[in-house]
Image (cartoon, rainbow, N blue to C red; front, side):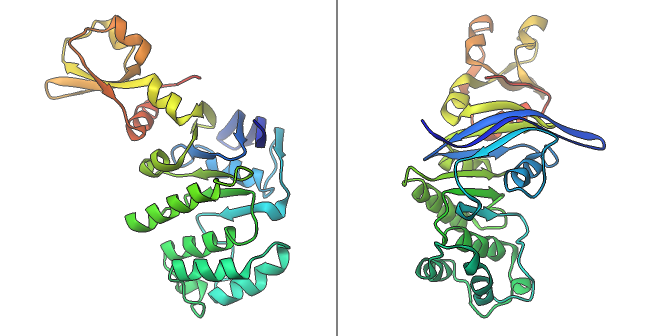
Length: 278
């Protein structure tokens, strides 16, 4: 399996915050979801991959050139006074493989008016113009920072379909950050989870979902030792809930409810102080 992106021991420090020894790979032909709370360090890492900032230590290896990377950031790096048509006029000369037919098709698909100025676009429409650009110049790697933020559910589903279609060509890959875990469930093959500047899980989505289960039961059902197995333990009313590793079910009472867990619940439990390991 050939990787399009490799981070090895990436570290970056700011006053009061550090990203520490982050390592992960992204194989060609796959989609990787990059998740974590605001301020966890996701955007800093994405900007470093794009060359906007430099790590203090570690390496970033890309199996594609700058012209083969499509980018969608939370705020578009376009001039506010540009019209949608002027976005193409100003950006297309930088991309040898620019496809004006594809760009026109995406404008129509996204209902983007060529005459409208960037400053007049809604948040969702600004995401769509960036996606139109990213998908119109022969990119091998898409790097997307919250690409479905500001979109309604139908538009989000449309974007997820586009990403899945993009990687049907197995030379292409996608790395995207998102707070919308339902989008990750639909699209991601891999998950990288970042807490306070540290990767706490890097692996396949299926392995993550298989490793953990949601558990619930009545108060007093667990001994102190058993309670330590529950990640994100929370009491409510007459009972408790949380998650645990599937392998730990054997030491918990068989009367507990144990069921499949969604990504959203895994991330909530992770952010309650749990540290997961591959």
